[in-house]
Image (cartoon, rainbow, N blue to C red; front, side):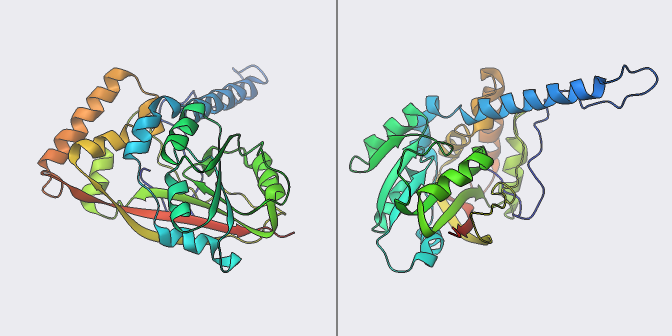
Length: 293
């Protein structure tokens, strides 16, 4: 979850505690220094992304409890090119099964694949009858042409797309569907926008998801839709939700405590959220493509 920008905007920014920017070579700079600094920047940024991507397992029970599900209308739209179901659906990078549960409720056959053992254990605990396999987007543990659709909830931005897209195309049957879904808080609502400002950590970069599914010859054009959604929360449970975001999982305990106090103070002083339960307004963004082979 978290704040989402419109799908057409530029690629995600680097966190504020990024390494130094490359410098131009000049009379006082030795040749090649800018190249060396650029390489250091890339390595550190990739290490930072990997740390965030791998941070969820330790918080698997909290993730399962506090993250929102997905609107059924978004799943129906994602699968619409396939016609009448039921369909064979791969929930790729399935986490604790937030998307799995919605797809099952729609009557489809689901195979869940997840790389993190603790997240997969939580998924199996909640969806005991689902076929659940360890694996990744870059190495999908399924034979060729075995699923009608691959759905990805809140995860495609962590993939190595150059490796993942051919793997996804391999397991899809001809004309099958790939769809990526992201939940994000609706920051067109004033109190939600201010809440994000209050709770922003040093590791938080506000991301755009529109270019996180790059074009590939094995897939057709991208269709986009946005769906209204919501989650029932209290001030305390909303803070708990934010604590399952990767930018909060990787900061130190002191900063996390400071941000939690700030967020809770804001929510308790805001009329819409001060007492009891309230609806957190969400938007669910969906990108959909069909396999071309």
